[in-house]
Image 1: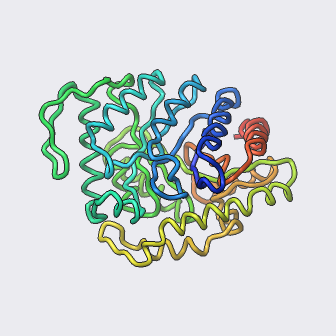
Image 2: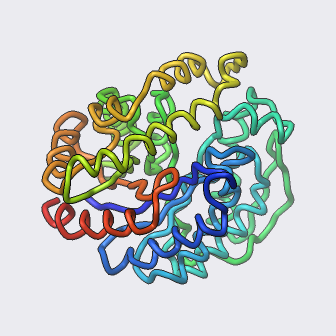
Length: 348
């Protein structure tokens, strides 16, 4: 199993300035290669303390590329629904060049009603824009000249520059949360999957659907699965919990507030999201720890949490770790990633 660093800003100016937040993140990124972390990853969100500090993940990853030489750079994930595919394809090629071919491109549909409302895009167009956007970006990256007459974007034969450093293009990931169809479609398309295991044991079923679809489509191998976890590793259990409990609870509360419009909104492209937000409102630090969605404790405890989770859901390939969640001070995060690297990663 490989382990990487995930950065998910869940703060606003009243908690931590953007300047401080990104300086701290890049300081952690600077340790990634020496400590053996496989990747650096960041999200795309807007207009809210839930992710809003990162409206363009490729800007951060370009800076991260200068602090690393080995770690992969992962968009986790970019949102075709709010972007022109011609622009995204060019930015992907540019970042792939800057990083000497270390980019992995994760795509997501977006799921926050307030983002759709502010961009003036219907949530009922989400699936269509997502599918069309990925295919247009794929064509622009893989082919020297590519044209498309889509429902939402069309363009004549076009050569996208810079051409990707990785050929035929950087690897694609599809972000999925809890919808079985999303896992199946990712497997069928031959893309890797990135998921958040807030749903506990159900993840085993979803990973199984992904791998079955992968094999049924005739792809070689078994696909690739990346799961995201909160992680805080500390020499003392009580202190580990004290440093993490309120910060994970604040992260969960911020997520629910950002998605609270689902309590009033409905969309055929997002069945069941009202219940999803209601269920998330019941989540706490303790339930996340119990489900294995958060890894918190001493090195030996976290090792047991990881092995127990793998026994529960089956093998997966990559763990993407939130290492400075909410307002985590830099010093705590530094000690945590160092201890995890030296005492947990070698056993796995």
